[in-house]
Length: 445
Figure: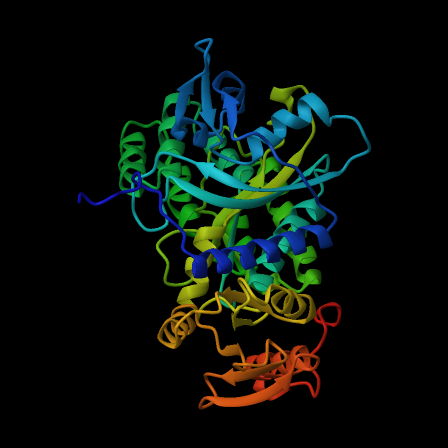
């Protein structure tokens, strides 16, 4: 039989990975709620003509299809633009700032390689209606808290500012074609092309030697707070000075949140210059050849949808974060343990429900399941506790076996079965912090 493939850039997610991804998603939602962000859900399909108003480069990589009337629709290629569309049409009223978040599937045409899926899940927040550096700092702090709540230990946020480099270009040359060529090279990370274009511009007398040196040096500047002091030597107008002051203020507030050491100032970060208007950032984990996410300030976007106001936000690839967590030791699974219950699918459904209500998940099996099948399932599903009715007792007595504890079994009456099962399951789950009595569902965090 021919191999049954999924489309390039897509994949099936099996139970263990799906459970880990769900834990990451739950961690993100928890942090977003803690900071007062409310969830919104936008359609997977949007009209192409509506998304085109954003000038976001991700729009160009979207999957397109036609509706019954011949209108071009596009599968959601990012989170922010649909939220801007929704805000302009439905949520523009009210006192700012507005805080919203979304967790949704994203679709983009990408090269099928690690970290470049065509379908992936993304979580992100948007703060709308504030241009303060404190708003930028909160968004950065939310990103840091999300990564840490998910269990990521080693990461950094590269932070730059669109205004600084735009100011440098504007004071260096009046040639619009040259400036467009240089910014395009940097956004596409074509540093060779960027240097070639600069050298030619200098040779043709379009840029003086001092400006050329600054345009070569600034993209290579990255590091801690000291970078802001070093790059100050290249300030050529008030707008550039204001950009550095904004970054300095953001760093001060992020430090109050306890994440200042995570910021890596990088004047070589370049994203879509037609979309971003201020601070921009990317999220890194060591050893990976791709970013985990990124974002920045996009003060012009909402005007395109009839609700002009400043805005800042970020998107985090949950699939990419999962890869980073696996690289750093895996996802900490904190789900409740499960047991295999013989007869829980037919004769002893009530017993299975009693255990579920008390403290554990139950993988129920028919009463006539063979011992060999039980052992195979226990290994396959990584279930440690086996619960079997004692033959001839009509379910009044049970054997509880710890398969990871040398096959140690304990007998129990039906009345005491929940206590015995919960104690066995939870004590094995956390042997160094085992309670004397297994906690009930409402008592566990």
